[in-house]
Amino acid sequence: MLRFIEAFLEDNPSPPTVRDIQKACGISSTSVVDYNLKLLQKGRYIKRHPDVARGIELLDENGEATSFLPKIPLLGYISAGEPALGPGADGSAHTEPIETIEIPRHMNKDGKPIYALKVKGQSMIDALIDDGDIILIDPTPTIQDGDMVIAWLKLEHETTLKRIYKEGNLIRLQPENSAMQPIFAKASNVETMGKVVGMIRTI
Image (cartoon, rainbow, N blue to C red; front, side, top):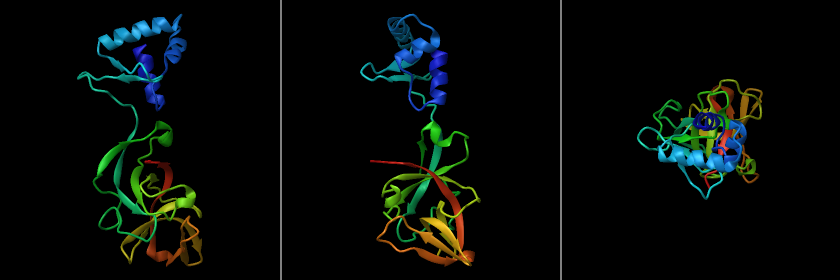
């Protein structure tokens, strides 16, 4: 039963229910599951929150709750408005994280080395990305028209969160806010630091 709970948490963002355990372990009734869960709790292998359907936590050897959720670095802030100074002094995303955050496993199934930034501003509000939200960035160099990217304006030493479009020798950085105007820059002046692959609402 304990091995099933561990395996379930490796593949799912939430713990199993009692009925999940009953079915997976071939147990005759939920009362038998409940009895064994009480034994696991008494042995300090798990902690239960009886008023919550998925209220099982695994405990480590020190009795602390463990987590199987992926952890990624939150590197700083990104402007979703006027360009702002990037997460690193030189625009590089490879800085020390201000904290590490857990994300649902389905948001990074293939285990890519993604990172997170917190959004400031509302230029992407029509794409449902608001001030204070956290965006997940894949630092891939492969960018296509219409991708939502972290764009580094080299001459200005500034970054911004926008959709990117190539227009001849220019780059259009398009906000997702009808009240805001796009930014046009020479292609040689724009470097992408990755594209948005997910978002976590903070409110």
